[in-house]
Image 1 (cartoon, rainbow, N blue to C red):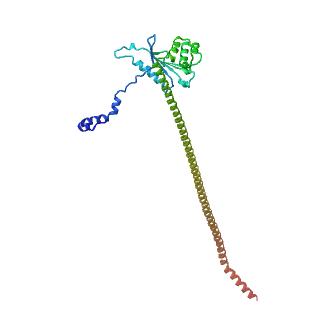
Image 2: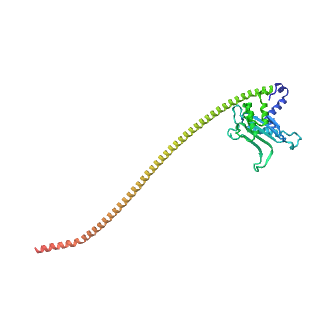
Image 3: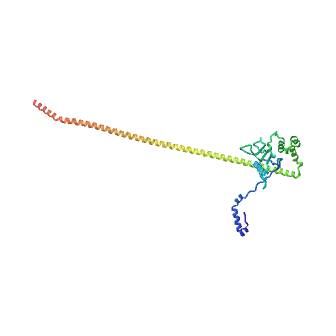
Length: 344
């Protein structure tokens, strides 16, 4: 939002007002309704039943085609009423999608080649026999058309849309039997088309080629980007794998080293504890042996001392006995001497 310098100078209140609105611009955008998509169809038909058929011819496959086709039918169904009209005036709307393959004959349902027709209705999922009869969508993938379609009119129309542009008049006469389809073949003869239609056809043909080239270029680019993305993803995944393997190996090696170190430390601690326990046991046994030896020696000493004391006591007793007997012996000796002298 831009204000002129003159406005800013002469009407500052207007500038402030606009700045105030600018602060809420996003809120205003959300509050104001966006323009609805009205949609456009190739052909609108009223059937004998007064029901409406919206016919859409799609040459090349496009993304989200089902949503687009449903949007066409739903928009037309909803926009039938004008203000004041009654709901009963709404007519049933049937969307008919004729999906061709273009110059490259590309099928619209490549993953299901056995399907060439789909018919959608509003169906009660709880009671499948119940339907809301208001909107239907019928789709034909003409490139998936099988051989031997039983309904002649349907078969002739499918042939018309699938390969009518490449058929000769003789082939049309031999293969096509439905009057309406024969009339359609007559109407599309290039030599019978009005000049303005022929010019428009050539413009559209060139536009189709240009669009096809754009799509082909986009598809090639998308495929290249896909391949690059896949290659980048694979390279990234391989790098992450290698990093994960390297990290796991490093972690395993660290765990191994830690386990070895822990085992060695535990073994060393066990060894030290065993040595300490052995030394303590040996010291205890030594002390016990010394104590036992000392006790034994002390006992033996005491026994020797006791024996010596006993012998000493016996010797003293014997000595005392000798002492007591000594005077008697001396007297006897003297008496013997006296007798001897008398004898002389």
